[in-house]
Length: 182
Image (cartoon, rainbow, N blue to C red; front, side):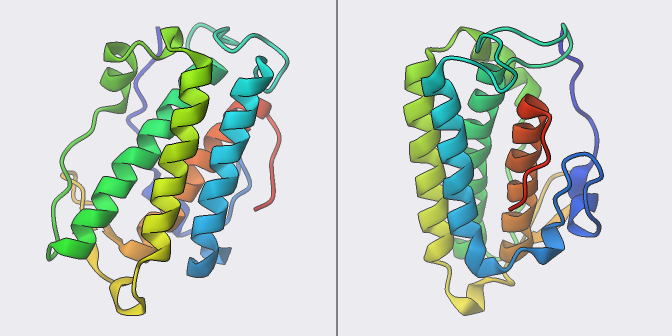
């Protein structure tokens, strides 16, 4: 059984992550689209390879309470999709409150572990590309537009980009155990 993650990870916008090594404050806005694409490629290639980052099968959990590489890839796909929706809200509405998303319920309801790796590989690539393009289209004046989660966490367009990069980068670390530079 996977224990739901209830941590507030917004602190990664203020200081480096000791686990995965990412310092989001060092990421320039212009780099966000390319980094999103690169992360999407990682997941697509991992799934195409047929083995998890540690050489185990894609559906195999390294421990009962830890997602398999396939489950992480499904989650990353859905993170890209969710953030794209939030970004578009921020660019079209004044200070929107984002719809709630229960990532753990989604993993169970959508049966992440049972999904087809080839389909997920394609979907994560498409979702990464759509989010990357959405960030490329942000006008300079739009970078400071704001939005808010229902828990009160506030983001600008720019900080949301750094936040999502940490999320997907950290999951790469979860699967490979290797700190990767960005």
